Amino acid sequence: MAEAQQRIFSTEIVWDNGESGTAVTEAGASLTVGPGSEWAAEHLLTLAAATCLMTTFLHLAAEEGLQVLGYVSSGRLEVPPDPEEVPRVVLAPCIVIARNDDTHAARRLCHQGRRQSPVCRTLGRRLHLAPTFTVISSEADEAH
View 1 (cartoon, helix red, strand yellow):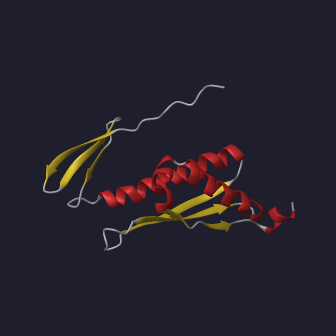
View 2 (cartoon, one colour):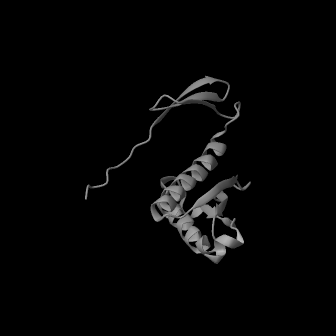
View 3 (tube, helix red, strand yellow):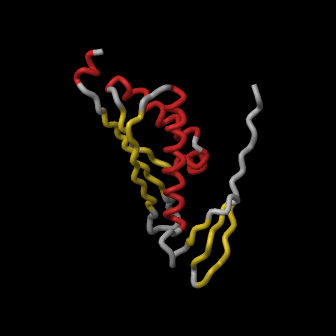
């Protein structure tokens, strides 16, 4: 078995004007960021956690053969007014699965995804997960 290698994700940011800048990834994708743009750092942090959880969960589900019919997630960064208090990220994914019997596996994989996602691991106890699961099946499917 091949040894896992460290993965590195890099970005660069160049100040544009005011408090905004252009962020660029190693692949060349760019995004205007900062308080004067549509994407503040707080949005990006929340989005990074939600995206990393989703992709890790979907990877784990595919490996296990869990049929995922849909995935939507809301996220928010809660920043207390007291700078001594620690902010937290709350993610609330709604995962649509085919069978009621898959609910336990989906819940387990969601929490496993949290433990394996690099961004979620970085946030540690600052990340709060509140998943919900919706089952879409027909009575004929349940009879089999």
